[in-house]
Image: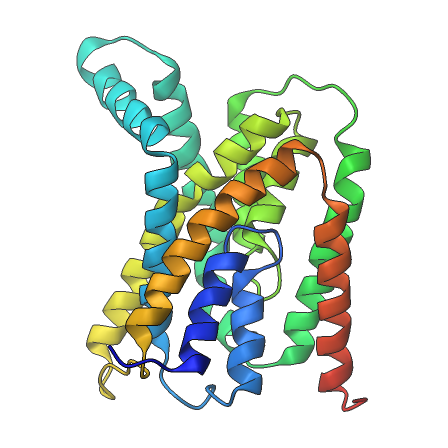
Length: 269
């Protein structure tokens, strides 16, 4: 297999940043901009990277996913309303809300992703969320699963904006709504599976309908492998850091990278 360092870096960044609350889309947009890839059709390549990382989630949470599928489907035939029944509906509702918010923003997001200014602003916004969440999530709440699904779905919809972290926004929304840290982490990544699969399907249709053909950069297989392996390691690291409540590290990082991106767009460097 051919190896290309630039392509490999993009795959590694996707794997590391997809699960950490630092926005993989923002980092990929910045790297593609500074590596000179923005003029090339990377839709198919981005699709492969996202498929690699969603596979990581499905393997990491396979027991939870299997239980939810069995209990949700079983609820229709047996009448038993187990935990997977309500959890499955919560995931469906959150996904629908994400689509309602995210789909109309697709064209705007594509344009904004090409600008380091917008990506940097998104990263700074993510840093602000990381700073505010520990304060807002201290009060005890007992909301319904429906209200949690709505809040987290809205957060995931907003996170389609470049530089805004999907995992950071959804975990933060779960914590603010009263979920425990472990459950907020779990729900955040479970609702990402249908959302990412749906977005990937739309991108796949876009690739098939495109008249310019499919472009895959040199060394794309190594990049996909890097995204999968590093993604698996990053997801395990993310769980430990979230459970330990170490949000500040991510916030500082997003603030620094976001500020650099904004300043560079203003040609101050």
